[in-house]
Image 1: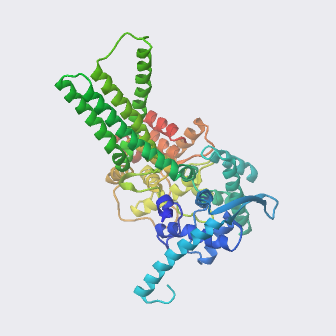
Image 2 (image 1 turned 180 degrees about the horizontal axis):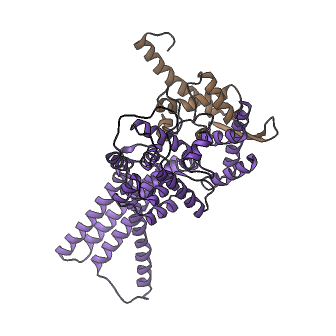
Length: 125
Length: 376
């Protein structure tokens, strides 16, 4: 996947997951979160941490180059808005190409997941 | 009294040295403030919250590299450059072959011409692959050679123009002129090959193809102030320096020592894998593993005698820290960074770290030049 080629060492998780796995899952995770609605960088990091039970913690600053790259690819778009405290905040939302990219990446992950399920015979894989 | 807004302004100025875009800086600052707020809500003081948030965001050099990759990752421009490179080699080969066949040359001259042309084409064909696999210390030397060589393009073109306008009265023969143009093409295309390859290589790449190590997420609370004070540090320090002192403490424990000497501090700097310091080492033709091996020859492990608690810094390592602070001040840097600690160890000289660095031929002036080159 392109994520591995570009930033395999930048998105890092504490101990639990191999860095290559974290890197490969970054883009589909961002796309999947943005499908739920507009969000911003800090919230994306906190949401991933929460949903993974603290197993995945992205290196904070390194999320932003990924977001910018995805924006250049035409998958997401951004706008400056206002946070609750009145400070400006950059929000990201999914574009049509992003939905297409998410669909493609989801198919790839499902393929891998099905294979593991067959090999490991575990329902929750 | 810690001034949070002032600290954020200083942080932003520091980041601006690496990241030019004000929009990116605004976004990173927004993130920093969110994390500071969260830390304060968790019970940290403003200073602790600020330091933890800055550490979580990461090193400016690493962020600069990642943002720079976005600019260079436009596939269409890379494809165009690659196509131009291959097309130019084919053009050089075709035109010069035609010239050598059509011109009135002796068989020996023609053979010499084809030999020179073959060498140039072979060099240009192998260059991209070699650049991909070159070790970082060689890569920097090649970078300098290619930059110097590209001056030949300017000189040759200028000379040819003056010759065409009859402003110079020194004419080379036909064959030397062809060879000159081949070399000119080789110099110019070398720069293209280098530019194509440069965007693939991380600034802190070390031997074996290992890339920037991901920075571990630090604990929410930074090292207690007394630990830093016991190292002889009283000025503002980069969070990576705090981390390196913690690693130095761990190194001392690993070796069974009941003191933190200059050798532990040097080992810690190497294991920290700070991108700026790795650039400096690369410029000095040193590898992290090589320096580490030399330190470990002298830093002999012993049976642990330390009962527990914090291990003290030796007077030599404290002196190295003070020298590091002086170096940061002399360079007008707002924080003490790992490369200043490296200079401090070298200047201290009498400890094991200084002995190792002297043995490896590390020269203070060269180190300062490399620090300036690395943009620190």
